[in-house]
Length: 192
Image 1 (cartoon, rainbow, N blue to C red):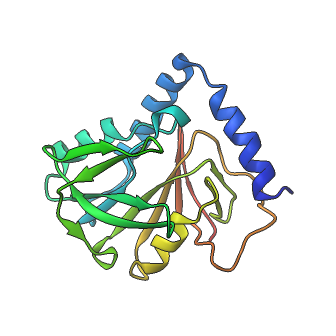
Image 2: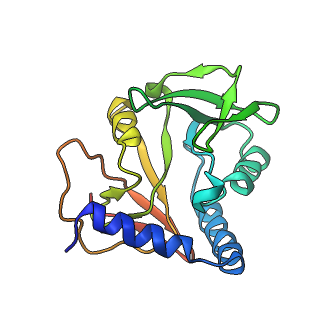
């Protein structure tokens, strides 16, 4: 059993040590897992845009696939407020202008704002989860705050390069677990 900060350091180092070839293969395997999921009940899908320097999974191949295969799904992404550690959500379309913020996060400019309660599924970035769906991210709580404002039946999804660990020791009452984790080669339905 380990605490979030220990796990965060270990898994950031593990992810940073992945080679370009390893990432290319894992990204392809992750896309295959995402393509096998049943997206038909989703009307508003929130997803993140990767911070390239942190070697997050690049969601763009998946975004382009959704636009082609499920044109009825409205894609949504966020703008981060680093004073409040909160997210505001905006529709993402093929012609949406993106500006990279100081943290390296691409954010929409001039897009239509979407309320959190409209969102049917959220695809969260993370470093790892445990088998109960408890997440370890970068420690600012952006997604816990966001998920707490979504409707009760929102589907909480995650993407990680690593399989779930047994248990994260220091889970807080405000932590919002995810339901399902996509990894290269396998999708995990979690116990949360």
